[in-house]
Amino acid sequence: MGLLGAHVSISGGVEKSPLRGEELGCDSIQIFSKNQRQWKSPPISDDTANAFQEALKNSRVRQVVIHDSYLINLASPNPESLKKSQEAFLDEMDRADKLGVPYLVFHPGSHMKSGEKAGIRQIAESLNSILRRQLDGKVMLLLETTAGQGDHIGYSFEQLAEIISLIDKKERIGICYDTAHTFEAGYDIRTEETYQQTFEKFDRVLGLNLLRVFHINDSKTDLGSRVDRHENIGRGYLGVEPFRFLVNDQRFQNHPMILETPGGDQFYKENLELLRSLIT
Image (cartoon, rainbow, N blue to C red; front, side, top):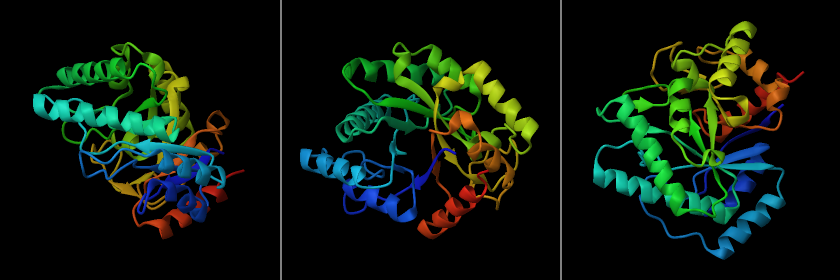
């Protein structure tokens, strides 16, 4: 069994998030480190970081993941937007380190009509530039698999591998596997055979050692739709079986498995109960 959990609110302060995870019965949580609809936020104080660590220590939550702001686009061909995105991403990294959170998940980016190859190069250049500015950083940056909606990059394992091949500090890079996104991008895990085939391909192309976090979501859209729409577990096109395979896969028993399903905390509790009922 992985470390089952959910994306929880930081309303009232980031230090309140471990208790929210505790109340939901989470073994892991994902948070935003600031208001994800704003480019800038006040820095995290020592008092806030200490309160967060104390709350985490006193909860059942064993692992925390931060998701970056959706405003950030490290593939942007627009120089002004790109600069803002790079500065905001560096701030996200600093905030993660301040809180002692080991993983920062981010969508690779949208090429905005500049083309996939140009977008891939720009993502890698952005990451290389940012990492050179944070030489003593600890947070691992996790490229999230995407559905491939619109101009979004990262919908194939090969694209992610190409980005990583261009990164200088590869030890700082990993992968977050989103079950809905990969299914919508064309990777089928609905049967035991296709589940094994998909992760064998992931291992060949990227290496399972790079896979550090899962987003566990069902999908409102069918296989290969390239449309990003999350659904509650068992209520979408994926169904229950892929999640049975996943929660019983011993290779991933220590991986955070984060719900981002619709409907809020009530549905998180139901989804967590369902996932735990699948464990054998």
